[in-house]
Length: 170
Image (cartoon, rainbow, N blue to C red; front, top):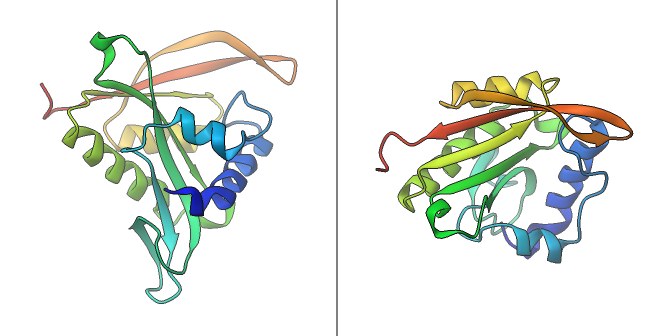
């Protein structure tokens, strides 16, 4: 994921925001704020390549349309949490059901494990059953529910906490 993907990444993010069950955010940030908040080594886009036909993970160089993205933020600046990240994954509404989210998540898991990250966390609204199912299939487990964690459009929302502990990073 690079600045060349910014418009499409933020449009996909805004589409997820507008659906109402993806995040507490109400508008996508600027690219500068988004870019500053995400770890540079663990952000990916899935791109439909005009010449290759189909979804592909990668740098997205060359022609193509962004189908989805995944990125992470550190959970804390404290050294003890250096191996723990929280991630987000978003897929364009027209690309859902094609395996894009799973391909992104698998790529992300491999990237974080190669970097020594031992825990990936996610917070998902309970109503977002597709995201919870995706994460469970990828080896995450539900570790609890934060009840009434925050207000979203004036309504208290619960958040399911999921995590994946790496079986290869000690």
